[in-house]
Each structure stands twice: as structure tokens, then as C-alpha cells.
Amino acid sequence: ITVMGNWTHTSMGTGSLITTGSTVVFAMGYTAPNITVSGGHTLNNVQIAQYANPSYATSVTLSGTLTVNGDLTYLTYGGTVNDVTTDGGTFDIKGNFTGADIMTGGTTAITFSGTGAQTYNRGAAQDELAGDITVNKASGTLTLASAAAWDAANQDVTVSQGTFDTGGFN
Image (tube, rainbow, N blue to C red; front, side, top):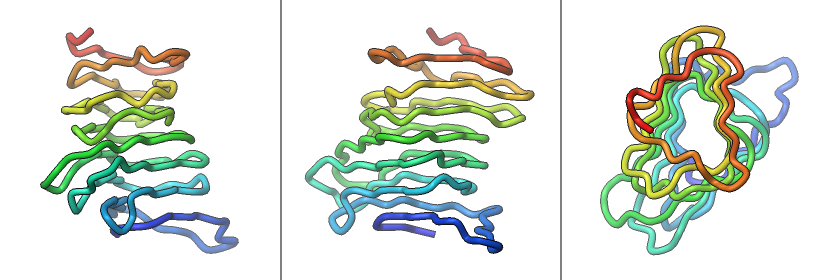
């Protein structure tokens, strides 16, 4: 599913949103420079992507917790790269995190809570997310696959449960 606008999840009563095996792409470009993801819910793989050579900064705003049962990936589809800031809410990631050169910070918190092995790869990110980072894994290890600069003002890194392996990076 590719979303080029806002995404709002509301209570579905007795229904459900089944996302097993899917990828939701929040795509920004000329027609949707800013995207708001509202309501706490769960998706499988999530991509935050920049299309169409925007000549201005773009943003993603979360309200609530977006649980990502698979991987969370920032990426660009060719052309000029511009800033993507991610603010508000929390990503609760059960798979891997991969940044890209479009990622330029923001206040969104990240929780790593998968039960298997997970990796954090900053990629070519210009800046890290400045929200709190939490490792809360019942089992498995979170391993850095690149350096992480989790040093923003008032940013906490907490390992409440599980193993955090710096992978040789500082």
C-alpha cells in the first residue's frame, strides 16, 4: 500500500486491520509534502519514502504509537534528496531499522521490542531521531550495524530488558 497523504486509524469495533506480510509506504513528494499518521496501531513493514524531487523539506508526524512488526526503512527514489523530519509519537519496532540520507532528525521516540535479532543502521542519515531510544526485548539482541549518534539534548537511551550490542561502534 502506498499512501501519499494522511493516514488515520480509528477503532474498528469488531473488525480488524490485517497487515501480515504487507508493506505500507508513506510517500512524500509534490502532492503530499507532509504526512500525519494518527492513532496507535500495528503495521508490518513500513517505508518512509521521498519521491518526485521535492525542493522543500518534508515531514512525518506521528500521534500515538506505530508498532512495526517488520522493518522500518527510510529511503529515497532517485532525484534530489531533501530533508524528512519525523516528529511526535513512538515507533515500536520489532524488526530492523534502516535510515537514509533523507532522515534529518525529529522528536519521534524509538522502542526496539522484537523477540529475535534486530539491527539499527543509520545509513547515510544526516541526523538521528532525537526522541528517546528504548531497548525492551524479551529475547534476542539489538546490534548496531553503523554508528549511532543518540546524543540530543534531553534524549535518553534505556535498556530495560534484553541485550544491546554496539557492534564495535561508539
